[in-house]
Length: 75
Image 1: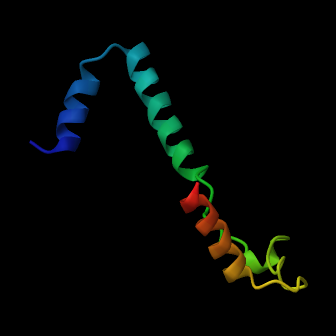
Image 2 (image 1 turned 180 degrees about the vertical axis):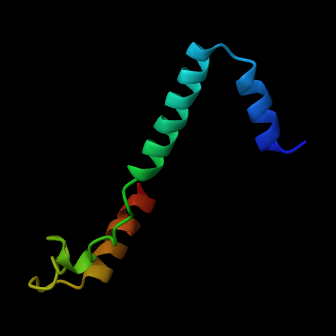
């Protein structure tokens, strides 16, 4: 027996009010599938305000970061 046959057998055994509920449930499942938003491509990080923040400073950002880590390790 296929899944469709089993669903049909079970559905036909229900009273008409419950068959209507099953039909409404199927419609809600189909509606949920339609309402799923499409994934969009995330914005580039270059568009973020923090990108290039260290560019205008006269500091080597990598050295600055290493100095901070060295301070954490000595404490």
